Image 1 (tube, helix red, strand yellow):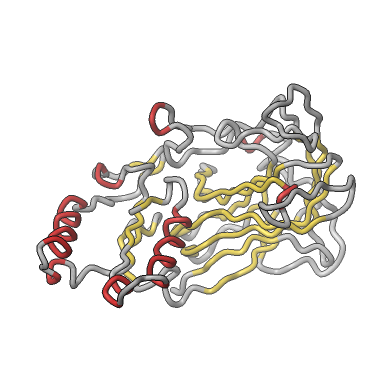
Image 2 (spheres, helix red, strand yellow):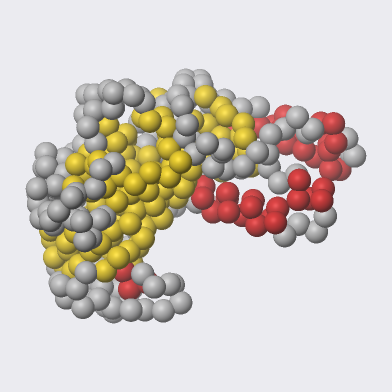
Length: 329
């Protein structure tokens, strides 16, 4: 059991797949189940009606978790398989539509991966800039977008939990004010005439360069409401020295362009007509992620840093895009 606003929904989905593929018996292989709610860390059992996660109202997502647990234990400990014979292998909550769905796998059948390309006139800085998100790539050259990432003034991440859940999130937050920072690039779709459902694993493929030997890139998908509220859906980060794998460190050369992939975890979200889809790009999300000091050093044992001038390229030669799993209508 995991949640869209917990840490690692994608990890839980991958774990289920591994458990199933490497199961020691047919019964174990056929009975790997997963439930994905819209809650925060360990919050599925305490969802209320109306369901409000962070600052976002999401209908009524209540689930009788304790009965599910009892049925599960009755099956395996009391040899009563009929208690779970009707349980779907995958149950997930579609945020925005605010309804539970059942499937045999995740992503469910009918999901199509679409590339939504980053475009701008060279000024995607802030949500007031000219960055756009479009399913059509740029046919020719296009000015890249540049921002200065200062580790002494990182982009804040609102709503990080403390206590025993330190590092996990408090759920959806409105990013309007944060998106007025010059070190946040915003690429926003046109107003949707028809709704779009994103259900599956989200990935950003970017062509980037930097003035520093190492830096981070953060990508965040947001649901922009007609009144400009911009709620975060899912995000991810990559320390660029690990672009070729986490078992090696490969520094950047100033000004050289590199292709990087940022996994944004998994989600299920309906963007209704009248809303817009937005992709944010920055180089920090503090304190959720530790700051890259841009020196190429260890970061954790350094007290000096440098400002990185980071560039996101989007052109016919360097077509940066976000890969969205679009569910069928």
